[in-house]
Image (cartoon, rainbow, N blue to C red; front, side):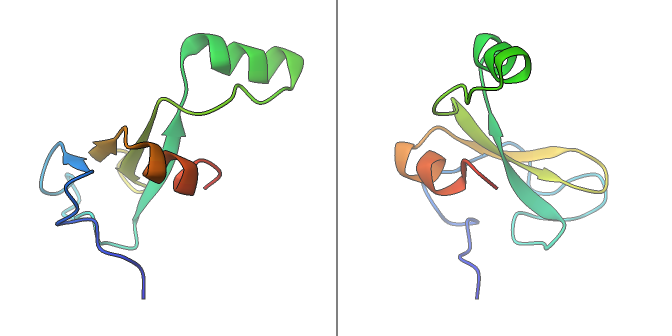
Length: 82
């Protein structure tokens, strides 16, 4: 069973649910690493990983709404490749 981030204090909730009605525990909501502009350009043009992401955002895959964000180093290391 996947861990629930609804009550995790390391995750800052931006809104309770997306416009589709999916919450943080929905299967339609996925984590995604967010990099700085420089890290992104290094990755795109040189092909080298830009390093550790600045944050992790959980967004709905149907509508694209960002539901939550975290800058916790432990969560960043856990979700950086998903």
